[in-house]
Amino acid sequence: MSTNKHALIRYRVIDKCLRQVDKAWNWKTLAEACSTEIEKVTNKTTTLSERTIKGDLNNMRVNNALGYYAPIEYDRAEKSYYYSDRSYSITEAPLNRSDSNELKNVIGLLRQFTGFQHLEGIENIVQKLELLAYESTTKAKNIVHLAQPAIIPGQKWLDQLYDAVKEEKALTMQYKPFDKEGFTSIISPYLLKEFDNRWYLYAKNHDKGLRTYGLERITALSTTLQEYQPAENFQPEQYFKDIIGITLEPNKKVQTITFEVKGNTVNYIRTKHLHATQKEVRDGVFELELIPNFELESVLLSYGENIKILSPKSLQTKLAKRLAKASTLYTS
Image (cartoon, rainbow, N blue to C red; front, side, top):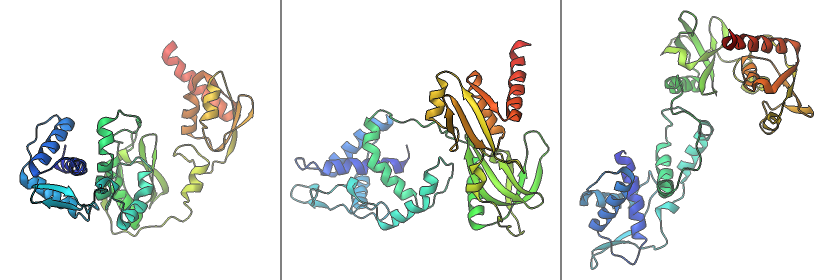
């Protein structure tokens, strides 16, 4: 655990101690309480100096970054520290205006599971939230588990691409498709999109127009003197509303996709729509208004024998061929 996290634990422990008015707290007893708590968390013995504890007390008195203005006083007769305002606690310190503005700026990113390395200005807020949550997280069992992986392939490019989109800067990109030779292109990045635990970039290839690139296939990015080419007709909300996933083939139109669901799977489909356009037209039969693509096929095939495509015929035939081909892996 980092020294920074140790400090957060110490602040929390000191705060709890100073709210216990029936006991006198000097730097030694505060150090012992902090060491005991740190050992519980890290399983490592820690010896804290007078300088460290007194430094913590000063930080809690005036810390503009974390928003602490603790009314800590020293009783020379008792040789102990105490809160002059007995109702005070650092856990009740409100977010200041600067914190609030930072939260507004990054809330869009925090609503997603990101791999961004630099969320400028958020570090102090995160520290404060860590401190507020510390006691419950050390005592309580895990209640929520997110499926988001710690590392998404290609996420090392997120910050550079984010800045390029925000500042409208063109980039030189080296790219290696999975099944083709690598190439170098000048791109104007428009949008970063996460889907199915992978990051994708929508950008204008200055030679070929709008393209989608998987971040894990980018091998290098660098600045270029070429001018950024703004998006003319790329509206993300419109672009994605008629598809599942990330693939939109040129000149394809929305189709009514009808499928029948077998057995208890129907309850899963009813309670977790495949798309916003989903509606149940009769018992166990559903419709989607979508442009068919690979991601839609994958979603439908994931239900195996419990979904049957009724229309369009082209999608029915395509999935039948894929299922037949897959079956040969087990019957040949």
